[in-house]
Image (cartoon, rainbow, N blue to C red; front, side):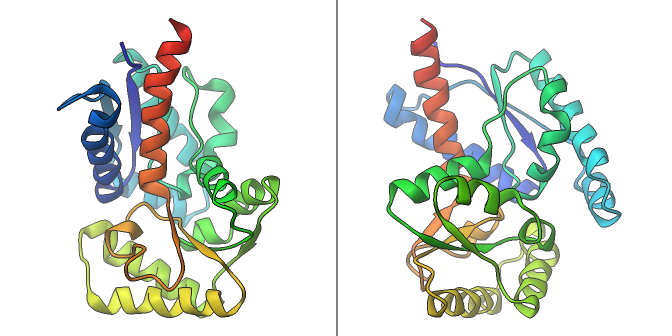
Length: 235
């Protein structure tokens, strides 16, 4: 039997895309209509935002850990969090966690290296872009990380927090991302990380000036591989 995937959710849109990807692409591994068992737990997004706005990363971690324990009780074998920003708190809780986690930035960095990219742009919330979550993982794989300029960061953050997490998708938002990614291309980037799990809902390879690294779907696919191949290895 495949392993049971536990999803520690934050925003509804990113978590839903991750869950949907696991369920729809599971058939490629397991046959028609099939996918691994999946459980999801989410605290209110407002609880997370309150912690983020006061820089309380331990508070963020406690919320994640609370979800982790609930998912372990539900029978999950390992955990994923389809929210890039929250990974800044993962070091605070990994030792206390009842289950192991797949790290979204490690999954993305590994894929970027496998595709031969060398200089990667980063998009996401201001909390993510200003953190070491992606630079650390990308550098470990021999890749450079390029952040948006200050004004671009502010606008991208506004779009994510005021529109995308609320299920609002506007052409103007797409245009803003295209301008920021286009500048990264001019700066020598050969790919861009969609480092907020809602960004793939409006940006993809078809409308991006650079090849995209879709953190949401890459994490979902890594979870599928772990669920199927990890189970086989244990067997």
